[in-house]
Every structure is written in C-alpha cells, then in structure tokens.
Image 1 (cartoon, rainbow, N blue to C red):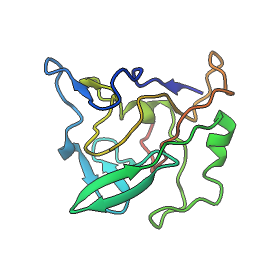
Image 2 (cartoon, helix red, strand yellow):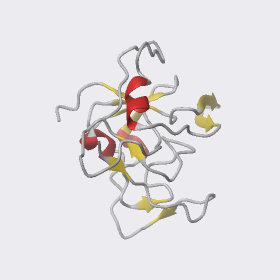
Image 3 (cartoon, rainbow, N blue to C red):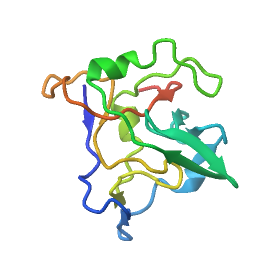
Image 4 (cartoon, helix red, strand yellow):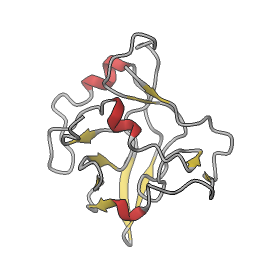
Length: 152
C-alpha cells in the first residue's frame, strides 16, 4: 500500500498554484466524457471525476462533485469495486502507486490535482492498491477509482 499525500489542508477554499513550476496537468490533457468520468490522454487511464462518497453532477458542461469523500481502510478500499458499476463500466479498481501519482499536479497544492477536471477533491491522502510494508493498512483514507491499463 502506498499513500498519496496531498498536502495538508491549510485553506479549505482556494487552491494555490506556483507559477514557477510548469503545469503538466492542463485541462487539455484530459478528455471529459460528461458522465462522471475523464480519460488522461497521457496515461490512457479513465478516472472517476469524484472521490468515492461524492456525487457527480454537471451543469452547463461544468463538472461538480458534491458531498464528502468517504474514508476507508485499505481492505475496504479494495473491496469497494466488488460488483461495482459506474458510467456503464464494471472494471473499476483502486489505482496502483504509479497511477495515482500520475494525478499529482506538482505546480499546485490544497489540493495537488487539476481541480477543474477533478472538482472538490479533498486535500487528504488517497489509497493505492500497491503494497507497502512501511504504512499501516488500517489508516482511513480516501479513494478515487480508475479503469484501464497504464502499462505500469
């Protein structure tokens, strides 16, 4: 298990962007499907727009996630996908370490993600499916599901 730490929340309202770091996570990197999913054109992975526990909606082409992201133990996170279907797909899974890290936008924090594409993402840690003996699997962290094969 690898935890993705998305800088601690210091200001729950505004994301901070560092203009001195090149933005490799521009909106144009993603294909928005208007069904609660988005594809990263660099990795080929399809992601759920909202974290688990949040509800996706769209108004005038602008995606929104409402509600709070749920927290899970690592085991619970891996079990979420049993019998799970969203946007017509039933092959959702918890991303591996490299996949979840591919979403981390290093030019911003609170949260460290493109918030236009992934709105209302909490500035907290998210689970990966990759094992890591150095971390506790009993932590309660958030989950963002993925589908596809990044080849990693």
